[in-house]
Image (cartoon, rainbow, N blue to C red; front, side):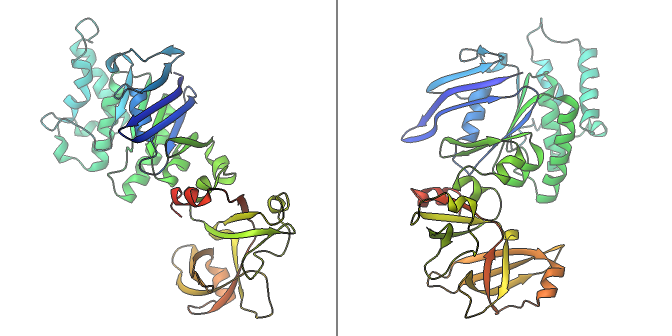
Length: 370
């Protein structure tokens, strides 16, 4: 089922949660609404479900205005972060609940209810727990039961609000893979809310980045990560180092040094003297020994080396007055070859940068958690 929202505006007191948001969700796709707490993503999800009303704007389901359609008639399945299972009902009866409370004319027979519930429990691979109470299940099992209950009423769209937010990291990762496989089997139009960047990029077909009630960028996971449209998107999607400077002959000059030796295409297109912020991912930042004659790169000191796993992470502090912190990633083989050690003074030079002009960039960077 296709979903579209047009000019959705929602205000709580003096707080504007959604500021004229317009989006179209493709039929059969799994879309992530991603952003920091308070950006409006859960409010938008609840408005689509009919659990919340917009102050202005329209929700279209299959091209039909759903503004006056009651939540029970929107054929929407909703999965909450904290499961919302009925504690006094066993697993089987929790999944069957939505079918049993249908109006008599729409209610399946008891035999069909039992058949459908068994099939759903097999789908979520928990048929062996049919007689258990929710308190006897793990968090991951409860969330799968909550999903089976949402699917029982054959929703046209599935909405998930931070579905794995209450689970530990290992279980979250397992359930992310499981949800992706389940979606590939069912192809039901699904929207899920998350503030976890890795979760959104790993699971979804499309990502909607939201910030302060606005949509910052929409695109496939690889597209938004590789080609962020705004400083907020760059800063929110993964670890990042940033450098404030100005444009000089197609390069970024910091207070006392050039960030990079060669002209960068993005920097070259900007006006000389323009104030900019350059973003560099940790794996795009190289480390070279300190050389007092070298005027390229940022002078820094290694404060910590974390060498476990396939990649080593090096934490550094800049030697300028603001003592800015930086992070570099490299293979353990590279680390060993360079002979880096804690306390060593070095120069940081990027292999790739993304440059944005600084307008109200202090606000954008704060929103990105930088």
